[in-house]
Length: 90
Image 1 (cartoon, rainbow, N blue to C red):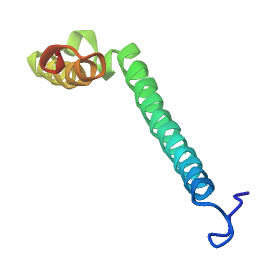
Image 2 (image 1 turned 180 degrees about the vertical axis):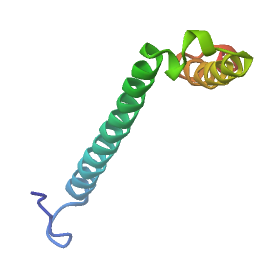
Image 3 (image 1 turned 180 degrees about the horizontal axis):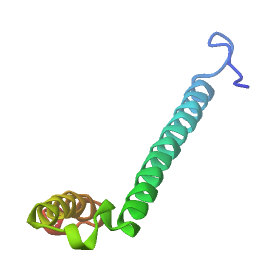
């Protein structure tokens, strides 16, 4: 339950502090929601990898290699950004 302060009788610093707290709580909730989305994607990718990306060894062709190369490039951009490497290095 959120407590709302009366803007007429409450000092400004208290109003600002309350607004900052609500803003922080909203940001934290959004952050945790996005983290859950990423965790779900990583779990799905790990499962797909464990299943050899739904490929059968006797049916592998260069198209399959190209697909994995594409996935690897996309993931490399994500990891470079997350760890400040590659084009994101300072």
